[in-house]
Length: 279
Picture 1 (cartoon, rainbow, N blue to C red):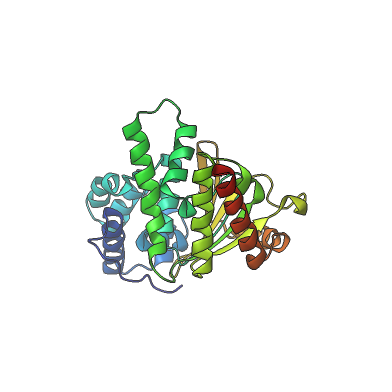
Picture 2 (picture 1 turned 90 degrees about the vertical axis):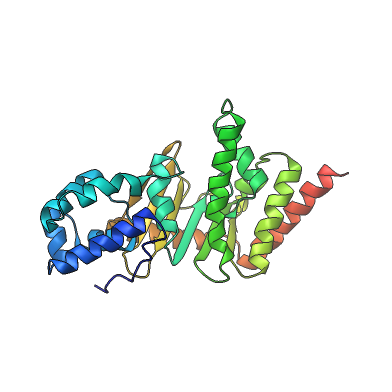
């Protein structure tokens, strides 16, 4: 297994904890596999903690303190590292996004968060919580927009999004909001910043009709897959599960329109929304 890359301890509490874990493990003369055996987890899992693709949970922090003789360092600090602006079911996936080298995502009913505009994100969050105070909605929108800053880098991470045509035609926030949202996706695609495909209604039944999925690859850690439902989510690193869902994604992409035809459809729908908004 390749060694973990150096982390910037000033970047986040989670990065600090990962760097400290790597230091303590190497000081003890243990490999990732050997330390994993003491915690009854895989060496890959230890690597994910060190690389920052996994959040350290209290039960593992306690076992690490015992295995590495670090008193209660990890127990004391894992709470701070686990704090997140995102819902509990998504927090770990959001952490993983920040260090992924490639993200492949399919969403059946809405534009994925990394491609959303502020107005679209506001409409989605307001629909999720119709009675929430406006300041709460503001916080949620800010958090979602913070995630989109991953795309400020010209090439990393690779983002490949497959959208269902239903997500493009579901009028979320009004026609003006939809026109802006689709133009934003088209702009990213035309700048070669993202790969976007659309599964058209004419494709009929397809392999991912049961829900959304997000596949993430990393430089120094095994790949992960994230499933999401209504107010629920699960991050999975089981190689068989990840492999099966990667094949699912490949089949889905094969049934979608080409990137060129997908872009044409997205821009046509954006124009339609503009025209209907301003007859």
